[in-house]
Amino acid sequence: MKTWLVAAWLCCSAGMATAAEHTVQMLNSGPEGSMVFSPQYLTVAVGDTVRFKAVNSGHYVRSLALPDGVEPWLSEEDQDYSVRIDQPGVYFYMCPPHLMMAMVGIIQAGAPVNLAQVREVAADKRGRILMNGPRFDALLGRLR
Image 1 (cartoon, rainbow, N blue to C red):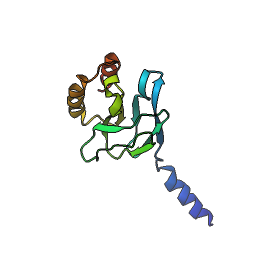
Image 2 (image 1 turned 135 degrees about the horizontal axis):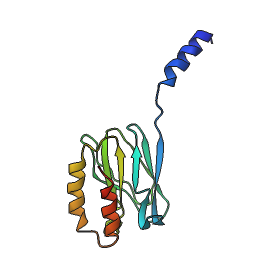
Image 3 (image 1 turned 180 degrees about the vertical axis):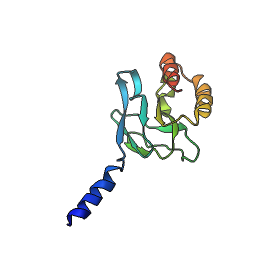
Image 4 (image 1 turned 30 degrees about the horizontal axis):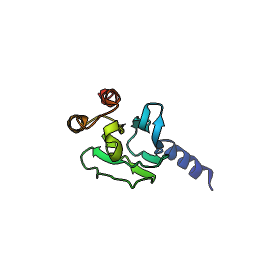
């Protein structure tokens, strides 16, 4: 390959960002307590992929509130699941069988453009949280 062609490729590819892959584990017990996504709060860039890893049995993931234009998602129980983060905003999700134990999580990509929607959905779900309420509240308190 010609030297000038290699130099041009290096110059152009140096400015290109590479999307990252993040892993969120679905756990019976983790650093944040019982029935958790770990990490519960994740900051990513638009274009990144988040992989939900089914570490323990009995968990799956369902979106609760998403930025405009993002299709809702629902995984199968005990299966890994990946989501590409295509829009800026807050991605609020839960494990349906363990919502009452505050098994919820947040992915934030850029500005929280849908924060009002997330707060509205969270207020609706808060009444269903029977255990770990302070953990639920602390997670939502991280949003600004």
